[in-house]
Image 1 (cartoon, rainbow over the protein chains, first blue to last red):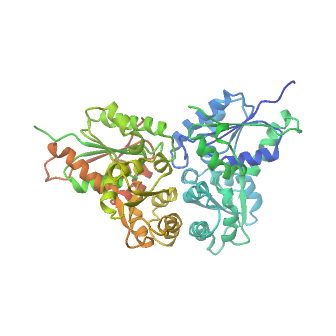
Image 2 (image 1 turned 135 degrees about the vertical axis):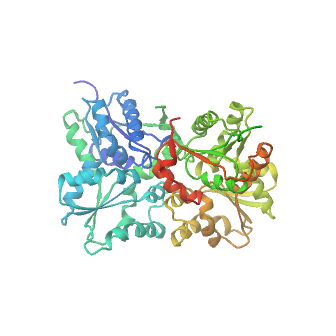
Image 3 (image 1 turned 120 degrees about the vertical axis):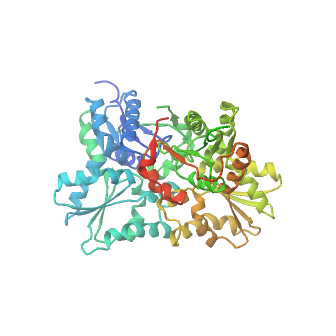
Length: 270
Length: 270
């Protein structure tokens, strides 16, 4: 085989999926990636399942046209609603979502088999985390709670301090102040990992925070191991978005954990 | 003239425009309305001007197809970007936005000619309020600040209490703690009126809160006075949305100030 392996495609409704890309690059630094943020139509979290499926198929088509060898759905809402449709439309392409990885990590982390899940309204209402956890541990007790304000706070860069902790108390205290509280909390939205240090401060010390980004990266690594790129040089990322290169770069830097340049972002129409 | 006058069309990116509809119905209780919330593609506030213009033209076309006699753009972001394009596409239809009404009310309210404007990122970055105020009062000093978290809080129904006040302090204190602070605050986003009582508690008492909904309603009333519906019976509202009837009804009730039934909401494709 000559030349580099084709890139790994990653899409999200916006910039939150960059927390997943960050873990993917950490796990597979030599790989090339194409990241697509559907910023013109974000957020997916408040949209119906049918709409999310339609948008996800369009995102996947744009990435497949760029000759990817594996598709990572770095969006919990899209993973919850669209994995089946994506696999049906692209039967030879490996398609990996974040939900199963997160559920697996949660079941491994919870000794009591009592797990709390926080996510967007769409992800919680769709019940995909609940189903994924029950497939692995049928008797698990699950407390699920939509936390939409966390998304807005993460996008503002308000990731620590008294306001984020007050909001966290309001969302989380009802889940953890019962007699037999959960011992694992799944961050079921790709925006949430940047809030993890603040959440740590308001959660009981016995609670393990489960972030599906790292687990997803491990699953992708197993999938693409065969055609892995040689490891000496750091791979490249091609940046695509459907709107707002400046905002994508500015807010995206929070989630990627490194600077992103607006002029490196190509705007495409889906 | 026999039969009822055609309805007044109102559109917004989602449910925030219901604060404007509420004032329209208060001012003109006998009129019929068609309200369209483009819930599949909300929010407009983080999208580029070109995208907002395209979406606004599609919303207007859907309402024009339902034979409206006047179009109210009950969305600050769309008013900021799309009024010109809407008037060019529909030259015989009166088109009324919320920005000019808000600017007029602000200039009337500010004795010092020093005005603070809060809105979404898109509205502030586009500068439409700043321009509209300067057209009326060229020497006015304007402090503008995007407050995206207010949108998420209003949609959560967190309209009062310590969290909303802490967020308000964080956003507003920098605007009002200077030597010569503004004496008027324009709520430049249709989500914000439901937060007005909380904002009142954190603002200096000398600051007048300006809400463009009532001023917009007065402007519409002047426009449609000629063909006004007779006043005995309360007019009807036809509800249209592009996604999520249940959420539209649930969250919309917060902004409309009265109960909305999900089965009364027709989902349309634009």
